[in-house]
Image 1: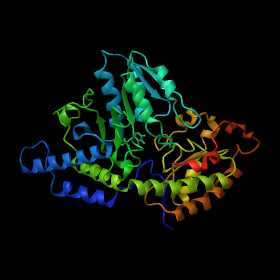
Image 2 (image 1 turned 180 degrees about the vertical axis):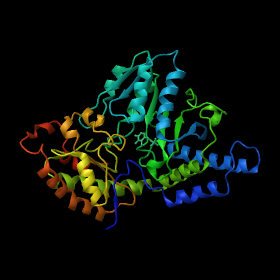
Image 3 (image 1 turned 45 degrees about the vertical axis):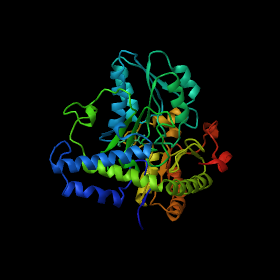
Image 4 (image 1 turned 90 degrees about the horizontal axis):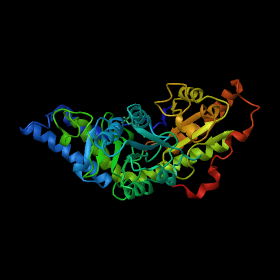
Length: 406
Ligand SMILES: *Cc1c(COP(=O)(O)O)cnc(C)c1O
């Protein structure tokens, strides 16, 4: 049987068009964009064409796009760069408890170097309350960093509203939009975003390339110094093939976004309905309606996420537990703890993230095998049985909101 890839939040397969667009820049057009001769100019033109494609997807200007080595570098650049550029203005950063480690660990690093950081809590659906943000801003606040959508539970934050509060209080606003760019409409102007991180491999582009949008007039200190590439904001000879691949992924995403959102949401809803119906003692994690079209994440009581992942792997069905970065360790996911789940429940997490190549038949095969896997694991589990169901009290009930998905 054909393997089923259900881990698009971890990475996506590069599209054939993306690979085709990149190949000439490995094979023939390998000039250095900084060189003044013809091969150099050819590479520089390709880079700048891609810069326009990225800018167009975000409603930004080409000169507002800085290419990076991926989402992690963009997040580090945003936080550290904003903190250094504004060290005279203040020393306080606000972020959320559910950020990706690229933001969270960078915030903790800055904290160890003397900055003050506020980690906003989230509700049981994973949402920050904009009023909490309003109250947390002081005259020392130099940056707010709240992700657009969460990579583990798919919750989409009210970014336009958060951006408006930051604008009103004249505080810089960064969003990690790695899970949304290329998947949902993102307009940096309409959403009041000053700085935004994106990564190509999360939307069918190549790995090792991403970008930081920095609104015109915003000052960010560079992390990587050298020859002054990217207008001095990020030195090092550009990854031209990767940048061309990112540009092509942006172009394709803009063209096919409506279709893909609908396609993914149908599969997601079939997964959610099916799992909640067929797997006793399972819950949906994340917000019932404000969630990514491709994310279906669950916790099943009395078992470990890792065991489910392994059993599904034997069936050649590939999902993840927590996020790919946390599943190497046995710590419960900080995101699942932040939404209020007890440790033992958080350990039983599975994230299914669908993509453009998945089909209804694949969802149905998952729904055929998953309930029996859970049942078998529970039969072997020492923690199974005899526990009150009250652990799930206060969690959002998906069935209350069925009509309203987006
Ligand atoms: C994947 C991811 C990142 C890291 O991006 P890389 O390009 O893999 O470094 C950052 N933030 C979020 C929300 C992600 O999902």
